[in-house]
Length: 423
Ligand code: PLP
Image 1 (cartoon, rainbow, N blue to C red):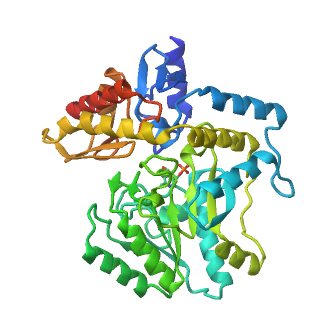
Image 2 (cartoon, helix red, strand yellow):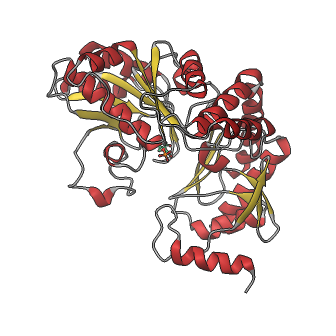
Image 3 (cartoon, rainbow, N blue to C red):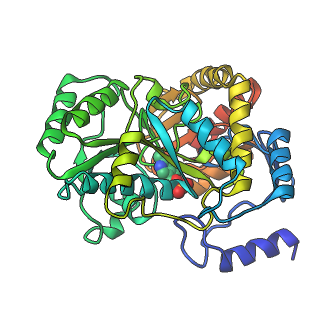
């Protein structure tokens, strides 16, 4: 048996994959290495990566600046506990995030994954409301179609009909859901949103949404003006506003944060994924001084959270290098090149039989079908076309690394066309 076959057999027998059965049913592709925008499979094939490892690898793989930051930090200190100790990589990262974030976000909690940063954001909101003497405000309000992670609290604010977490109906607390926000601005929808928030002024602690793009809940875009509606309506009732920028942050939608489209600042914001350029698992929840002061002045005097790997120096050092690359480089024009390449490359799919919609925003391209995708077939067709994609439900989509050039984007569009044809 070849080494590749042997490894895949062991994988099938012992390794869980996301949402997978055990033992595994389908063979994943074995990756040997990755460089720039390319993944190299064990069988020698090279694929242009259309996924950025799920929104994360914005600078591509093995970027020399990120590699160097990681190696340099590993020679100083790989990890120390964050209780009672601090270090320069974490201090630099928190300071930079505060500088780059929407106005008013001043305090940074370093978490170890996106889901945990959402847990922390929700705990911040609940603890702040409790400390402010509003103990009945325990629920969360969100809109349908969202995705905020797989741990328990985030699951409660994911799309209730999305299927991903339907297993837990009856187990999880029931939150308040508004309809999926439309692409165009609709005053009727805005009025209904305001009314729902007013109706729940006594029992909702916070509104949590993905701004401008709903990712894994359906890859939908909505009008940025709804974020201003949320800001005004929540402020009127002392309800906190949480933006989950885990997928949209760091330039992906064409603004550094999606909150920048309408120019709205939330009370709490989550970031993750591309924070380390996709190198290491790190996320953060940022909040305003008002939220931090409420929590710190309440019973207990602090936020009730403290993971072992909080503020991991390796992850912070790479995040600092990634943010420097964004600050010193021209991410905006790279995103624009990808956006126009995707618009041109995906346009011919409009009107193709089985295609319900084609949409592009920033460095995100989505083809929605009128039927569920056969994931294995669509993925295999893209791989045969030299492209890595990971379709789900009725969606074949891409968010390439920002270092993808015009030819790479054209190849990704061709890969998507091949995946559409195969399904
Ligand atoms: N929030 C959003 C908007 C996401 O897209 C994701 C992951 O896809 C998460 C939260 C969860 O992040 P993680 O997978 O790092 O736990």
